[in-house]
Length: 258
Image (cartoon, rainbow, N blue to C red; front, top):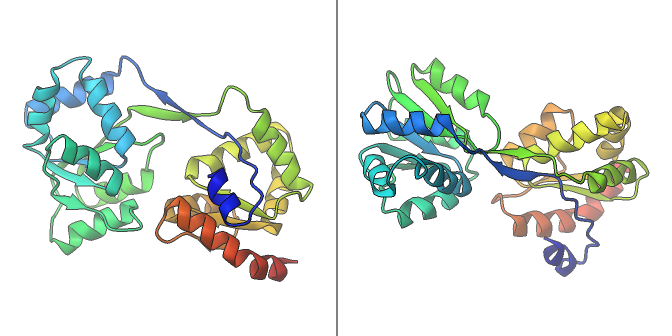
């Protein structure tokens, strides 16, 4: 990220905002495997490549790898984007539905609708990626599906939050022209730190005065929920287009906001 920003003539300040924490002794995963082997799961949705890999690793603590993969091959598999696609192909697990860009849960619903695949009466397992996707679950349940999320890791604040705290106060002092967000969880974490520092409202006001760049729709949704304006959203939702596009748009955007 630093090199990307520098190549595009920006001056980066990178802030460590979250750590990925695997869940050990995962009873959810064991229960998932048991239901998978009994043929009680109709559809499994893989949201991330990291999560798919973590799910298999957690399952291997209880059952042989090939037993799990064989059962997955007999299940309808849906993936949210290219990263889980690579993992599933390496496992030689067939993919029945793949969400197009920008690879959010909305596109999963859209591809099912386009292919006339009904989830009514089906038991769907969703591999979570750090936090629940409640709107997705609500939509599935509204369509008559049974939904079981399986959590294999969670996002936590880093042990050392000094970088985040410094960034919160630097934003309030107006030291940043552009705030780039690369995940929805970053929004939650920086607001948590702002609350702890008792400057949440000041940070929100200062952030609104800077240019806010989002990596994609899921991140933008989290920003919008906090009342923050999205000045630039990357399409496709990747780091390269985010950095290049945001820095190209910055002069006009910043002039308009002053």
